[in-house]
Length: 401
Image 1 (cartoon, one colour):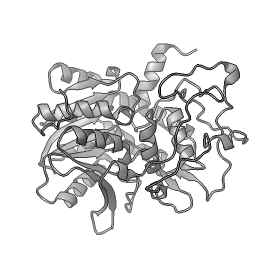
Image 2 (tube, helix red, strand yellow):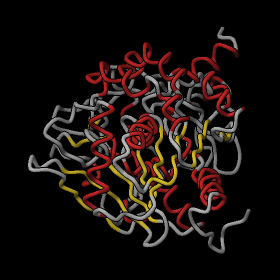
Image 3 (tube, one colour):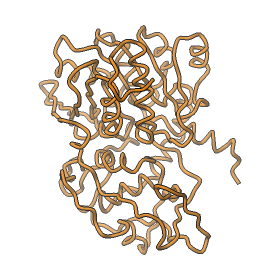
Image 4 (cartoon, helix red, strand yellow):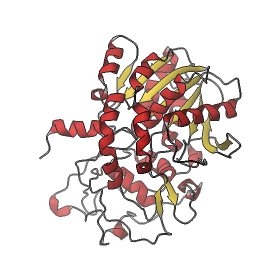
């Protein structure tokens, strides 16, 4: 039986690529009881006002960006490994409702709808240069004050981009749930975790349900808008965002997984979170448990695979995090570190916090590694307070100190 201390270590060490820790809970729900979850995908336009393809060089490398807001500082949002710009959807809506700001969420190299001549080159230097190029192509030589905000891998890239000094208008740096010490310790276990995930989904609804049940994203609404950005269609080869209509009709089926529970090949990632009602938790006895989660039996040209195969980029992972804490502390701008748990702090950042070189905030214990997706309103409140206190923007009527 796994001790509570070991569980904490597992949760702490699995996070650096933007991926969730395995859950120790199995999915269960009494048959015929509880509110049915909605796993239909949501179109990006509910949260962003526009999206654009930004071509940055003669090779035709293009980056998909999503925008919202028209005044105030520019918040450049960088997602974690395997995710996409759409992971910031709910946060973007929340933060723009609290303070004056402009949002630029970027599908990073090899992710989402971005396309480059070498999608596997995810080195810290290359990705940092990508961010600089995108911002310069969108705003020219005179951008508004820039606040770089990155989650997990994106947080590391935000630090590298700020350290290049190629964006002189950087006024703030916010890193979400990634620190050097715990990230470096976790790398040895990441390959096994990546291989434990489902390789293919029959539908977007099934993928969304998996992400919620597995604990990758604990906020169902965020999963519905962000999960398509993590997948590519086996039919078209394009990112699955193109398969999400602006208006969707909720299907009558209770669960996209129901039709697949009788197939023969068990899904390797069997650890899933307990599903709950929106208003109350549902207790179940062993006799009421649903069958084990099984993969769909699909043809190679049906369904969806992951947009990027992160297992091929393992040799580049250490470069994202090596020296990250010292670099973060040395950047001479207003800084904020947001963590899912204070136990993620390494020694260097702990010392820096005590010396007043950085701020850290411990988020709600109910949130997972995808902090900005699980509790976007809470993260927005913390970020808004940081921006206002550092005089980087002005609050709106909805903002309360």
